[in-house]
Length: 387
Image (cartoon, rainbow, N blue to C red):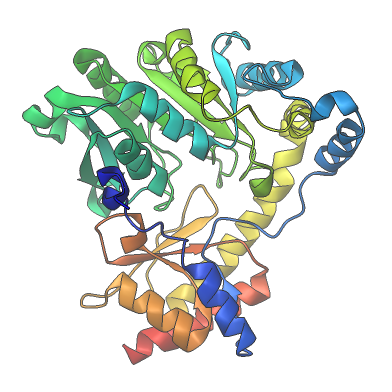
């Protein structure tokens, strides 16, 4: 059997092998602490569970949703965009439900990219940016994010010959995995560059509610001119601890939304309508539901930062997301450190190499209790001392 060349170009997915390794260690009696995946241990909102239970009892909710989906979810997402960011969108032409933003990003890439075109992808980055680009048969131009440049992707620094072929750039602030945030003046010059070069800006914004120390994350649409060139993705996964529910939405210019929907017509028939009903209930109360989760993430962040420093690490304090991005000393690679942490100390982390070509950081997710985070930190310190 011959497989498509695009399959060979797909990197190994960063989380693909961890569940099996973790299972093996648990069977061996190892006490495993998992701070790898961004999958918090908090319960989803009660209103989500209650709305899902009610909707699941309605036989109509078990029918195909197709691409229209549950109209009330579209309306709730549009209302949230207006309340939160002051941006009004037509819920039936400029907004579309997706089965998690991950799936939507890949489908939009398929609608826009093709062989001979390029996508500028931050390095490190969420794996779907590369994956969606490769599955669309387009080329990937990695852009290294550097701490001394605040982990910002500067389109003007991309070589002119690459920029001429670029049809998509992916941005994600607050950023996974670096936890960096982007100032509005940076976003404004990026939007202007996209307008000049005819580039679609795919803005992945699932962490906009998980912010600390007074920082408030914007929508890309708060930048003048962004509606001409951007599609923004939102998700209930992170801010409302609904990762397994697989629900989000894309919002932007109607032509872009229609193109993504056209692809989706041939690939999926929409998220379960009862889940969309639950999503509508959550978004109607987003301002009440998100802050308690953020408070707990902040408590975990504030506990782990001094503990990491006491063990010889030097992370910068994140102003957003559920992650701590930890630099490694010279000569210590992220893949080797991850292997030693997992096999030798029973701690699941994600190496920077899992997010691209850089190999000198690792990511901790604030997804377990403070005592377990502190125990993980102590174990990681012993691993560092031994390398």
